[in-house]
Image 1: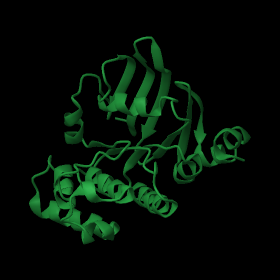
Image 2: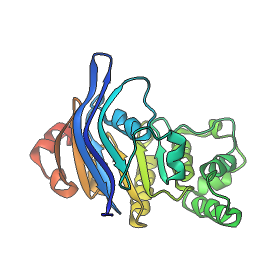
Image 3: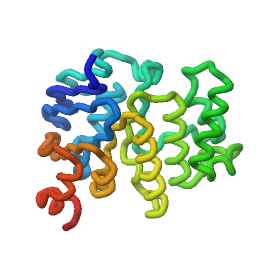
Image 4: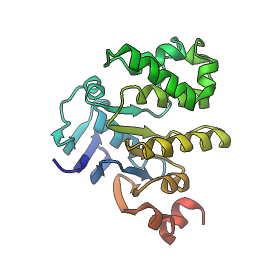
Length: 240
Protein backbone atom coordinates (compact mmCIF):
# COMPACT_ATOMS: atom_id res chain seq x y z
CA UNK A 1 0.00 0.00 0.00
CA UNK A 2 1.18 3.55 -0.72
CA UNK A 3 1.37 6.33 1.85
CA UNK A 4 -2.11 7.38 0.75
CA UNK A 5 -4.49 7.59 3.73
CA UNK A 6 -7.54 9.22 2.12
CA UNK A 7 -8.37 9.48 -1.57
CA UNK A 8 -11.46 11.13 -3.03
CA UNK A 9 -12.19 11.08 -6.77
CA UNK A 10 -15.10 12.73 -8.56
CA UNK A 11 -17.13 13.31 -5.39
CA UNK A 12 -20.57 14.79 -6.03
CA UNK A 13 -23.22 15.46 -3.41
CA UNK A 14 -26.71 16.70 -4.29
CA UNK A 15 -29.66 17.52 -2.03
CA UNK A 16 -32.60 17.31 -4.39
CA UNK A 17 -31.80 19.81 -7.12
CA UNK A 18 -29.06 21.53 -5.09
CA UNK A 19 -25.55 20.43 -6.00
CA UNK A 20 -23.43 21.04 -2.89
CA UNK A 21 -20.29 19.28 -4.16
CA UNK A 22 -19.75 19.12 -7.91
CA UNK A 23 -17.04 16.56 -8.58
CA UNK A 24 -13.92 17.07 -6.48
CA UNK A 25 -10.64 15.18 -6.21
CA UNK A 26 -8.70 15.30 -2.97
CA UNK A 27 -6.09 13.19 -1.25
CA UNK A 28 -4.28 13.13 2.07
CA UNK A 29 -1.04 11.20 2.52
CA UNK A 30 0.48 9.70 5.64
CA UNK A 31 1.74 12.30 8.12
CA UNK A 32 0.34 15.27 6.20
CA UNK A 33 -1.70 18.15 7.54
CA UNK A 34 -3.93 19.11 4.61
CA UNK A 35 -6.35 22.01 4.82
CA UNK A 36 -9.53 22.66 2.87
CA UNK A 37 -10.39 26.36 2.86
CA UNK A 38 -13.17 28.39 1.29
CA UNK A 39 -16.11 30.64 2.03
CA UNK A 40 -19.30 29.61 3.85
CA UNK A 41 -21.40 27.33 1.66
CA UNK A 42 -18.46 26.20 -0.48
CA UNK A 43 -19.14 22.52 0.31
CA UNK A 44 -16.34 21.91 2.82
CA UNK A 45 -18.42 20.47 5.67
CA UNK A 46 -20.51 18.45 3.20
CA UNK A 47 -17.27 16.88 1.97
CA UNK A 48 -16.30 15.83 5.51
CA UNK A 49 -19.77 14.45 6.17
CA UNK A 50 -19.59 12.46 2.94
CA UNK A 51 -16.31 10.93 4.13
CA UNK A 52 -17.82 9.96 7.50
CA UNK A 53 -21.22 8.85 6.18
CA UNK A 54 -23.07 11.39 8.31
CA UNK A 55 -24.96 13.22 5.57
CA UNK A 56 -28.75 13.49 5.61
CA UNK A 57 -30.61 11.83 2.73
CA UNK A 58 -28.93 12.94 -0.49
CA UNK A 59 -27.31 11.61 -3.66
CA UNK A 60 -23.59 10.86 -3.39
CA UNK A 61 -21.47 9.92 -6.41
CA UNK A 62 -17.76 9.31 -6.89
CA UNK A 63 -15.27 7.19 -4.97
CA UNK A 64 -13.76 7.61 -1.51
CA UNK A 65 -11.17 5.31 0.01
CA UNK A 66 -9.47 5.19 3.39
CA UNK A 67 -6.27 3.15 3.77
CA UNK A 68 -6.94 1.74 0.33
CA UNK A 69 -10.45 0.46 1.14
CA UNK A 70 -13.74 1.94 -0.11
CA UNK A 71 -15.62 4.09 2.41
CA UNK A 72 -19.01 3.78 0.72
CA UNK A 73 -21.50 1.93 2.88
CA UNK A 74 -19.32 1.93 6.00
CA UNK A 75 -21.37 2.79 9.07
CA UNK A 76 -20.01 5.92 10.69
CA UNK A 77 -19.42 4.32 14.09
CA UNK A 78 -17.28 1.66 12.40
CA UNK A 79 -14.87 4.36 11.26
CA UNK A 80 -13.73 5.03 14.82
CA UNK A 81 -12.84 1.34 15.10
CA UNK A 82 -10.78 1.87 11.94
CA UNK A 83 -9.09 4.88 13.61
CA UNK A 84 -10.78 7.56 11.54
CA UNK A 85 -12.04 10.24 13.94
CA UNK A 86 -13.81 13.54 13.36
CA UNK A 87 -14.23 16.66 15.48
CA UNK A 88 -17.48 18.06 14.05
CA UNK A 89 -18.41 21.67 13.49
CA UNK A 90 -20.12 22.82 16.68
CA UNK A 91 -17.98 20.40 18.73
CA UNK A 92 -20.68 17.81 19.52
CA UNK A 93 -19.63 17.03 23.08
CA UNK A 94 -21.90 14.91 25.29
CA UNK A 95 -23.31 17.81 27.29
CA UNK A 96 -24.83 15.77 30.14
CA UNK A 97 -21.65 13.79 30.73
CA UNK A 98 -18.56 14.99 32.56
CA UNK A 99 -15.28 15.86 30.88
CA UNK A 100 -13.80 12.60 32.14
CA UNK A 101 -16.77 10.59 30.82
CA UNK A 102 -16.49 12.31 27.42
CA UNK A 103 -12.85 11.25 27.19
CA UNK A 104 -13.75 7.68 28.10
CA UNK A 105 -16.33 7.72 25.29
CA UNK A 106 -13.52 8.68 22.91
CA UNK A 107 -11.78 5.45 23.90
CA UNK A 108 -14.84 3.18 23.70
CA UNK A 109 -13.19 1.01 21.02
CA UNK A 110 -10.27 0.24 23.35
CA UNK A 111 -10.02 -2.07 26.35
CA UNK A 112 -6.50 -1.23 27.58
CA UNK A 113 -7.58 0.48 30.80
CA UNK A 114 -4.14 1.50 32.05
CA UNK A 115 -3.23 3.02 28.67
CA UNK A 116 -6.60 4.82 28.49
CA UNK A 117 -5.97 6.35 31.92
CA UNK A 118 -2.48 7.39 30.79
CA UNK A 119 -3.91 9.01 27.65
CA UNK A 120 -6.46 10.95 29.69
CA UNK A 121 -3.63 12.32 31.83
CA UNK A 122 -1.67 13.10 28.68
CA UNK A 123 -4.45 15.25 27.26
CA UNK A 124 -5.08 16.83 30.66
CA UNK A 125 -1.43 17.87 30.42
CA UNK A 126 -2.07 19.51 27.05
CA UNK A 127 -5.34 21.09 28.24
CA UNK A 128 -4.86 21.87 31.96
CA UNK A 129 -8.23 23.62 31.98
CA UNK A 130 -9.95 20.29 31.33
CA UNK A 131 -8.13 18.66 34.23
CA UNK A 132 -9.27 21.40 36.60
CA UNK A 133 -12.87 20.72 35.56
CA UNK A 134 -12.72 16.95 34.95
CA UNK A 135 -15.87 16.25 36.99
CA UNK A 136 -17.83 19.11 35.42
CA UNK A 137 -20.63 18.51 32.91
CA UNK A 138 -19.41 19.24 29.37
CA UNK A 139 -22.52 21.34 28.65
CA UNK A 140 -21.41 23.90 31.24
CA UNK A 141 -18.05 24.57 29.55
CA UNK A 142 -17.23 27.59 27.41
CA UNK A 143 -17.02 27.17 23.64
CA UNK A 144 -13.23 27.05 23.75
CA UNK A 145 -13.21 24.47 26.51
CA UNK A 146 -15.70 22.33 24.60
CA UNK A 147 -13.45 22.54 21.52
CA UNK A 148 -10.49 21.35 23.60
CA UNK A 149 -12.61 18.49 24.94
CA UNK A 150 -13.86 17.50 21.47
CA UNK A 151 -10.29 17.36 20.17
CA UNK A 152 -9.00 15.39 23.15
CA UNK A 153 -11.95 12.97 22.89
CA UNK A 154 -11.23 12.31 19.19
CA UNK A 155 -7.54 11.75 19.92
CA UNK A 156 -8.38 9.11 22.55
CA UNK A 157 -8.91 6.51 19.80
CA UNK A 158 -5.34 7.03 18.51
CA UNK A 159 -6.59 8.09 15.06
CA UNK A 160 -4.71 7.32 11.88
CA UNK A 161 -6.70 10.16 10.28
CA UNK A 162 -8.20 13.09 12.20
CA UNK A 163 -10.84 15.25 10.52
CA UNK A 164 -11.30 18.73 12.01
CA UNK A 165 -14.32 20.79 10.95
CA UNK A 166 -14.00 24.53 11.69
CA UNK A 167 -12.17 24.16 15.02
CA UNK A 168 -11.74 27.93 15.48
CA UNK A 169 -15.37 28.87 14.80
CA UNK A 170 -16.84 31.22 17.40
CA UNK A 171 -13.77 31.20 19.64
CA UNK A 172 -11.93 34.12 21.22
CA UNK A 173 -8.56 34.92 19.54
CA UNK A 174 -6.51 33.61 22.48
CA UNK A 175 -8.40 30.31 22.35
CA UNK A 176 -7.93 30.09 18.57
CA UNK A 177 -4.17 30.39 19.12
CA UNK A 178 -4.25 27.54 21.65
CA UNK A 179 -6.30 25.28 19.37
CA UNK A 180 -3.91 25.83 16.45
CA UNK A 181 -0.92 25.24 18.70
CA UNK A 182 -2.41 21.84 19.56
CA UNK A 183 -3.22 21.10 15.90
CA UNK A 184 0.42 21.76 14.97
CA UNK A 185 1.66 19.63 17.89
CA UNK A 186 -0.63 16.72 16.95
CA UNK A 187 0.58 16.94 13.35
CA UNK A 188 4.20 16.96 14.55
CA UNK A 189 3.47 13.65 16.32
CA UNK A 190 2.78 12.12 12.90
CA UNK A 191 -1.02 12.03 13.06
CA UNK A 192 -2.52 12.67 9.62
CA UNK A 193 -5.01 15.56 9.61
CA UNK A 194 -7.59 16.95 7.19
CA UNK A 195 -8.55 20.41 8.44
CA UNK A 196 -11.57 22.38 7.24
CA UNK A 197 -11.19 25.96 8.38
CA UNK A 198 -12.51 29.44 7.57
CA UNK A 199 -9.43 31.14 9.02
CA UNK A 200 -7.43 30.58 5.84
CA UNK A 201 -4.27 32.27 7.09
CA UNK A 202 -3.90 30.15 10.23
CA UNK A 203 -4.89 27.00 8.35
CA UNK A 204 -2.32 27.52 5.59
CA UNK A 205 0.38 28.49 8.09
CA UNK A 206 -0.14 25.15 9.89
CA UNK A 207 -0.65 22.92 6.82
CA UNK A 208 1.66 21.15 4.41
CA UNK A 209 -0.78 21.36 1.49
CA UNK A 210 -4.03 23.16 0.82
CA UNK A 211 -7.15 22.97 -1.32
CA UNK A 212 -9.41 25.94 -2.06
CA UNK A 213 -13.08 25.09 -2.47
CA UNK A 214 -15.57 27.45 -4.07
CA UNK A 215 -19.21 26.71 -4.91
CA UNK A 216 -18.74 22.96 -4.69
CA UNK A 217 -15.55 22.79 -6.75
CA UNK A 218 -11.84 22.65 -5.91
CA UNK A 219 -10.47 25.75 -7.63
CA UNK A 220 -6.86 25.59 -6.47
CA UNK A 221 -4.48 23.21 -4.73
CA UNK A 222 -0.81 23.22 -3.85
CA UNK A 223 1.89 23.73 -1.26
CA UNK A 224 0.40 25.64 1.67
CA UNK A 225 3.25 28.15 1.93
CA UNK A 226 3.04 28.90 -1.79
CA UNK A 227 -0.72 29.38 -1.46
CA UNK A 228 -0.20 31.83 1.42
CA UNK A 229 1.88 33.94 -0.94
CA UNK A 230 -0.46 33.57 -3.94
CA UNK A 231 -2.11 36.92 -4.76
CA UNK A 232 -5.39 35.19 -5.67
CA UNK A 233 -5.61 33.49 -2.28
CA UNK A 234 -4.55 36.67 -0.52
CA UNK A 235 -7.22 38.71 -2.29
CA UNK A 236 -10.03 36.20 -1.78
CA UNK A 237 -9.33 34.75 1.66
CA UNK A 238 -6.58 36.63 3.48
CA UNK A 239 -7.87 40.17 3.15
CA UNK A 240 -4.64 41.35 1.54
